[in-house]
Length: 413
Ligand SMILES: Cc1ncc(COP(=O)(O)O)c(C=O)c1O
Image (cartoon, rainbow, N blue to C red; front, top):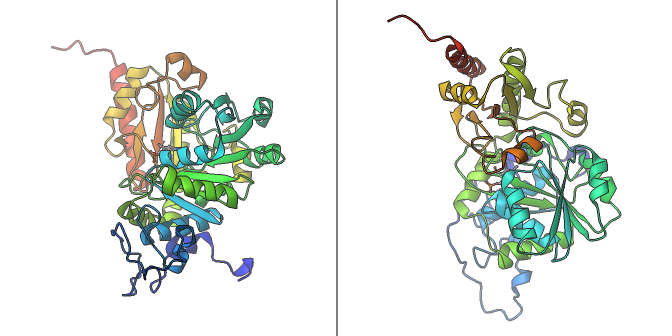
């Protein structure tokens, strides 16, 4: 099939990796069954059979940690969605990131990372890679590619980015950084969780490897913890596969694999709606006098708006904004909402809101939060796919609660 007749992403999300008459489905199941078996009967004691020769693509399975038909269907689909040759599904996004970095560095090596990474990834880099494995880490403001360039060293073995970032939705220039490290022995990884492959495909922009917390948009229904890695690099894929199956073993279980596989089927429909709702919410907030700033790459005054237009095909469903007030105003605002649930995480069909200073970024010191631009009134929302009028009405409820608290106390008895 030539490229012109290759299926679009909208089609790959629905069918890729699932074939009713292949991979252990004798009944012709249209959707991949949940294969719970931990081990698989072998055809015989063939002396020639070596584990590394077992081919899941040919329907061969030996033991559930090594591979499993449901997980394999998911891995095939995720690879196709990111446009890569190899996919691997993990027990969490954290396991996917850990395994990828472990495959990329050795003690004495150095990692350059975006300072604005997911807080859990920063802790992993600091407390596992730096403190336990002897891998140095430099954090940079990667919104300027020159800062990444300045941090590179002889022993830099990995460059680790997210784009857009959490919670300020900053972007880095993925193609620019790929060019920068193209001639070096460096693994360039991008965490594409916030954009999803529907809006951004880092491998096409030159990254070596893409990871996801599939807990978020790829699953989309807030009912599974899971992760994924996709790469086109055969040698890196082999290392990751070895660590996934043997060295670490944090694989995605059959039921979670099934859920994520099912979730991907509606990715295109969900992402389009997430974006439409997020755009409406961003514009609404931008016009409110109680809001000092809105951070959404789709707004023309976002500092990375032009870059977003170049490297993404849409702006996603997550945004953050700052209230004119103090942390008590922010708490009052959040507590008045009934549609936006107060919860961490993003990417589900339901709208969520969180107060980073009191929740995800609370472990950081006030100085660290300030350095990342996380004020006490910064709120992050993951805009769901509910009716937009209901979401706007809910936010108005929050502003009303703030206004009531600002009124002078009544003197009536
Ligand atoms: C951007 C990003 N990467 C990675 C992770 C970690 O994923 P998980 O919670 O699936 O381990 C998260 C979780 O919030 C995230 O937001």
